[in-house]
Length: 329
Image 1: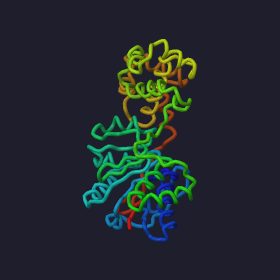
Image 2: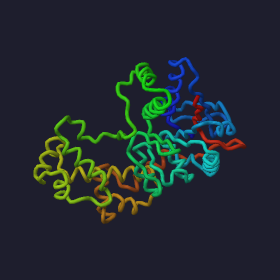
Image 3: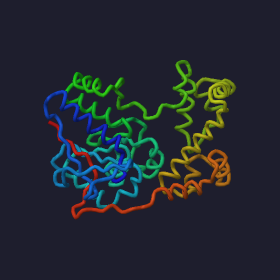
Image 4: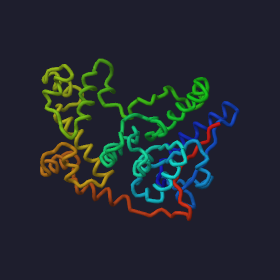
């Protein structure tokens, strides 16, 4: 898609290239199709030219939509129709970074578990209640393969390569790319801050995870402490010692950052954002938001809208989405 993530795209394709290089066999081939005749421009300003056309995609084993910023603006009815047609032909459908939005908006992820970049997880999860968005690095659910962004596509492709061609080839690719640890499909994208402290502080990790799972209906701190087998006083000491704030402040900041994600990555009305982040009144929400970020929620939305001007993609006569389509030998 226009404004796609170059790092996500490159990590996927380069892993397949290395599989061919090390094995000395054409295990994989790929085709790139863009929504624009001149090629799709990545978010870093570089342009990737098309190497195939729409007709070639139906011959592929897998088709991945590679998204990035402005994914909602760059997904239109022509993209959705094309993706549905590929799915009807029995092609395994996948997504990299925010490409999952395109699949979800085409109705191709209803009833599936799905991964998407963590920055978009909250906003897009609210928009598609029939899709089971999760925090994993990548997810394989039947004929849908979805992946978060950054270097995660490298780990996804290594997982697919290992399933088809064995662990030895994956180890050799990892050595070439200096990959120290292979991430599993059930690894989380973001490591909660307490895990960075070191061993022996699992209570903080558990507390952070419970808070993150209870944004819309915040738990009383006494109930939170009881859930991790601590007294409220013990919980407060841990947060003061390692975060220089009390649990209530940490919880509030977590809810406000979720609100920021919804304001910048969705079109939800501010009142809905208020409720989704566990605030009882808009005045309390606005005051807390301004205290943390220095401006109001409405100003946040205006700032974001001003940095991403809308532009319509220049579609060729035969519409196609920016995808990396893979043929597996």
